Amino acid sequence: MATQGVFEGFEDIGKYNGFKEKSTRNMLDQFFATHEPTPEALDYASSLICIAYNIDRYNSAPTPKNISTLMDSYNATMRELRELYPETVELSDGLTHLLAEAAK
Image (cartoon, rainbow, N blue to C red):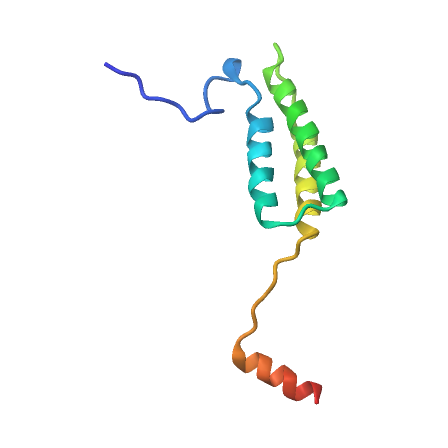
C-alpha cells in the first residue's frame, strides 16, 4: 500500500528544512512580478527573508523555540511592504460623473 504524500513544509517538524524561507522567497518573486521593486521595498523583502530564515532555525532546533515574536516581526514587515503599493480602486461611471460634477 502506497503512503500518501505530504505537502512540502507540512511533514514532521524533525524534517522541517527551510520551508518558511522558501515560501517567503516564492511569495516575493510573485509579488515583485506585479509590483515595481524600489530600494525601500527590497529592504523590506530582505528583512522578510532574514526573519523567515530565523523562523526556520527556531523550528528546526533540537528543542524548538517559540516563534511568536518572529512572526509578529514578519507580519509587521509584510504589512509595511504591502502599504508601499496601495491597491487602486476603480470607481463606477456614475460615481466618476458625480465627482467630476462636484469638482466644477
